[in-house]
Image (cartoon, rainbow, N blue to C red; front, side, top):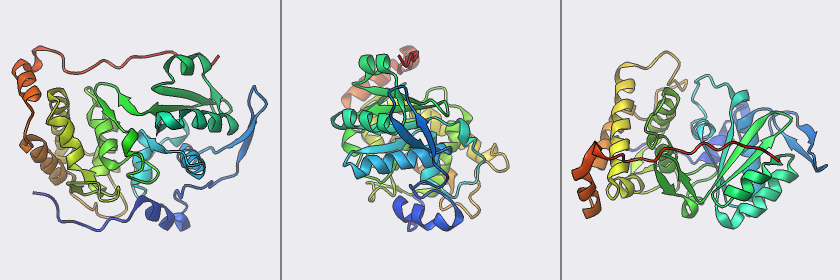
Length: 301
């Protein structure tokens, strides 16, 4: 059973509403640092990576570019009341864009004081770009069109579903696709499930789309295998292994994570499966069902 629907304001409105408390609104919230890159371009950066990420997304939006925040910081942008301690100074920034906006975003990053890894971007720029804020030693990864790790999903046509971040379904998928999921990934997923309803569609970016998730798990047995295993991991921690402060919001959660996990598992298991899925299910764990993410060194030269 799905939890009873609760009105959830949009991310844009929620961020604006937290301005008085000093939480993130998508605009600079601290004194700007000036830095000079090797090319002589001067640009501003912010010390707090979440504030800086939101600033970059806002600048891209002003230029008509489709750029959204993903990665761990996106969960804190989506759930601004989450009180878990975050070592923000050490957080990387992860962005998502489409191939059409890749060149313009690269120009924007350099203009804002970031150093491009030219060799990496020349080799892999069709799917991923890499920049560094040299002054703060903060990397920025930009995924183009899709996420390709243990599993793959496309997001190029989903960038306008929600403001600021990828849609909640894609954020959740980015964690649930991790075969060897760690506690940080689990907590990110639980925070999202505690704050956003499950729904058939996206509800203007304010719900976790079951249709989006089951579209993958009903056609790809590997996706189903990894996600159901991770839902079991989430359920174990949600039920009996949460530590003080890990999943607190200064208020009761909007949804019980355990109920959300159970409802999501029911939807994933109950959705009709494709012939391809059924054939792969016969093989099961005897064949590896996921990819090992490739580690590539960054030269910045």
